[in-house]
Image (tube, rainbow, N blue to C red):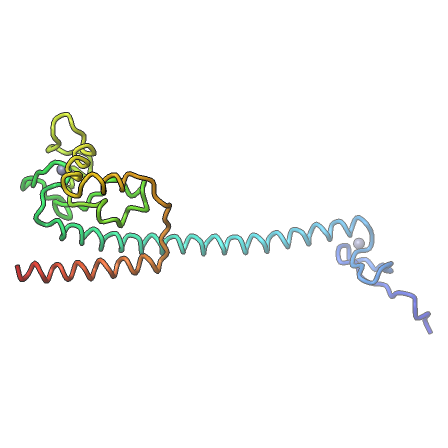
Length: 206
Ligand SMILES: [Zn+2]
Ligand SMILES: [Zn+2]
């Protein structure tokens, strides 16, 4: 009979030689094999972690892409509503109705933001901040801009006439930062689609 305490030889996981373990969980024969084994384990863990990180990154990108799509749809619905609301108005910045040659791809009119969506995302769906505007004016190449006045200055002056200084200053004042969830964007889209439909019905009766 073997002495019951004597450990049985094991095969080293690294060099595959037999060795007699000193500790029950020992898997490598000596220090150098143990180091190699530890490094290999680390590398395996790193690969697993990288895989998780890549998956999370992909999911985050996907979420962002969906958010952008919903943002575009909500903005399109809002902008359509603005163009309908202002259907009888001239261009907000220059007071012109433009000319036939102003018809560009997608029409002659934009819904132009007073404070840009980029600099003021919290005002991108604010009805005071968005008005019917000639595409050429919104694109910054207005041929109707009044002398000595930039498009932005014209917009501000005519906006004050339209909604009053107080509301213009409220737009220009400080605001809470704002992020939109997909749920909110869906609700905004539905709201403005509904209001645009109502308006189209009313116009048909006019
Ligand atoms: Zn070994
Ligand atoms: Zn204009």
